[in-house]
Image (cartoon, rainbow, N blue to C red; front, side, top):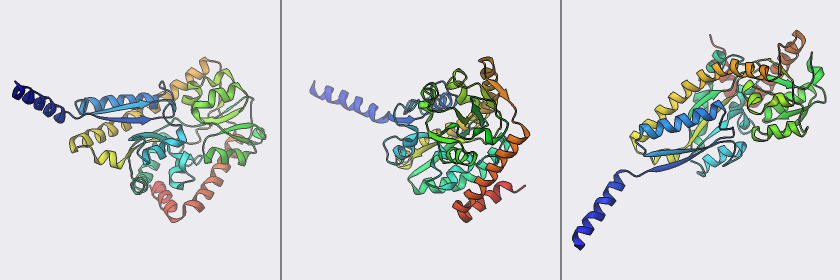
Length: 322
């Protein structure tokens, strides 16, 4: 009898060993209803299916596990096996992370993808040095200016309380004479409701997610830049997976990238229509405002190249190559 029980126990142990389940955490700074997060959830489901349940990824939306600026460090330190970050949040750490936050450098989806292709090899090398790998990126829709009052030029933004969520948006505030106030996405709705900010630059997506139309009534569609979210993976956690699981993760990542960029394009028009339906005035920038903001972009590109040095110049040359 004891022999039979031992055999049964060995049999159970053996089957468990054959199906060792790995669980990963994937923190994100955005709401569960945001298209980036929906893409993450689809990606996690694809990995689950492709690995037959061997790798389970839990998506933690809306900064519920780590605040947005903390996610990169959490992945690097192994507190989370992977995470989604806004690359331009980390431009002070390394200028190349913030190249897509330079206004009017890449102001369309095609230009943004071209910039990403020039940027990706550099990012892969930097993240590898930091013990991580880049799985995929997805661009946000083009950025415009949300503001409480009609504006005709950059001078009309002087003294306005302006949301800054990364070095680039803080610098824009300085250049137009606005007053920068640091507010991350998860706190944006409250900041508007309490009057902490009166204006900010972001996409139609963020405006709709945060019900900006309840507090701010004008959106100037400047299409200034398309910042990217990146999904990064802790290299030690990746290396601990078997080869088929690694391949499944990378395949699902490539599919999430293609799907995410296509969804971003489609959603841009949808979000602007939804904002309009909810009382937002969608306004084309005046020639003066467009000229003023282009000057801001030129200044920031010059400053960025000084910080980024030869590496940055190589990236820009590769991007501008026909």
